Image (cartoon, rainbow, N blue to C red; front, top):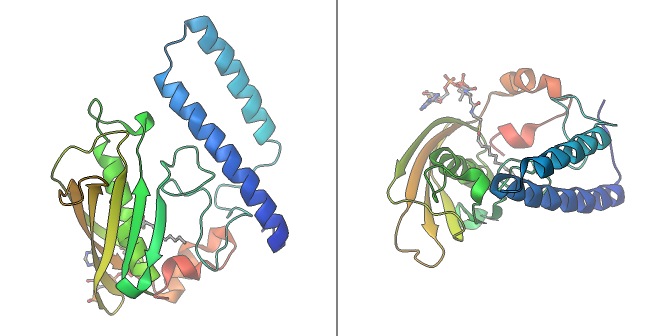
Length: 226
Ligand SMILES: CCCCCCCCCCCC(=O)SCCNC(=O)CCNC(=O)[C@H](O)C(C)(C)COP(=O)(O)OP(=O)(O)OC[C@H]1O[C@@H](n2cnc3c(N)ncnc32)[C@H](O)[C@@H]1OP(=O)(O)O
């Protein structure tokens, strides 16, 4: 069931996946901002259904890992947070800084992720925080699943504003790691807009095999302590 690609094939496919991802994000943005009349909406609906038919000519089963992904490194091309191929990802661009036990994400959130008018939905802010929290731990060799997540919303987070989301691994005790994170606007880094704290727990190896059996792949990079 796994579709193995050579590194060259994977590179070509990744470029195509990223291009489609960007085109679909542009489409999603237009879809949530359009005010065209109903007959034009009906035309767009037909075109969208045609496109779904084209992409559905070869679909992965829901647990199957994408051929462009690399389970050895944990890269997810369709991550809803940073995946270049995901139509719903903002997408955040994340840089790992394992020597500082940190990772830094840069993102500008659009209309499709709106909560209160003009502001980023609180659940989306929590998602961005969750990602850098888990990732800062993982990049420093202490990967695990989020066992608990606390978020404090300090100031409204506006749509269309470049944001910096930083996660930092604070401590490790056995299989458990604690990390903290904050969101700031790129042009006002001294003001914390939101902050989070998480406990990440590495799955025991036997539990990881059980939980991820349906992927048919070794996904140790997502679950182990590194
Ligand atoms: C290149 C790109 C890469 C990108 C990489 C980045 C990817 C980002 C992914 C984002 C992260 C997610 O969304 S993760 C998805 C959301 N999370 C989940 O689905 C997790 C669901 N929960 C579970 O499966 C389970 O509850 C676990 C695995 C978290 C814990 O189960 P367990 O392994 O049986 O744990 P257990 O033995 O009871 O406890 C182990 C230790 O953890 C502690 N512990 C357990 N739960 C908690 C808790 N809620 N809060 C505090 N501490 C806890 C225990 O006290 C114990 O400490 P001690 O006695 O040893 O001291």
